[in-house]
Image (cartoon, rainbow, N blue to C red; front, side, top):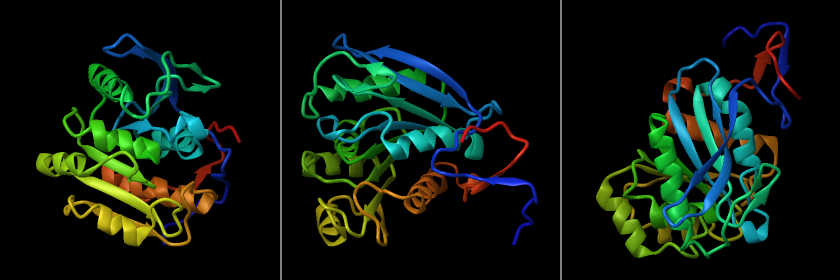
Length: 250
């Protein structure tokens, strides 16, 4: 077991670790301006880039949905992972409101393309789509042919994405990881295995006791560790504490 320094601070749900944070805007091909935030490692080294796609905005999903907010607060410092968060069209958060209107995942195709194009233009390396719930639909429906390494799916409901989307991802050969809560309200493990038969190379991880919204610090840490293990394996597992002389907000 590694030695743990005596003077440390546990990372809690409200802990904000150092990073270079920038409020961003980018415009889609159909003229919609989206608002978001880019959190970069203060070290200047970027092992990977997460392009996050939030849950359903008509049911409270936005760029600050807690898994993605905590990813942006922690991963730049703990794993040298950049985190790009944004509000899809018509979605509001404390950062602001993106133009346009919710489009049932259709018009949002342009949002996904614009986010990936923004990350590529900024030369952010090792880009991955990370979708949660509705965001997994966007990743599956619109992400296979984009300039990303692969996709990570948190609680995929498979309400909108279909066989053609899975087949396209399969044909690209890009890796896909799905984290399935044991007690998911929409697609529990048995149904998930059936739904993803057309994507046989996908890695599926069933998380015991978890539910669709991943509530609780235990599940946040599991999700963030699984993400880092996939995109920046040399930085996993991520620490659960930080030296107390570091600048933190909590």
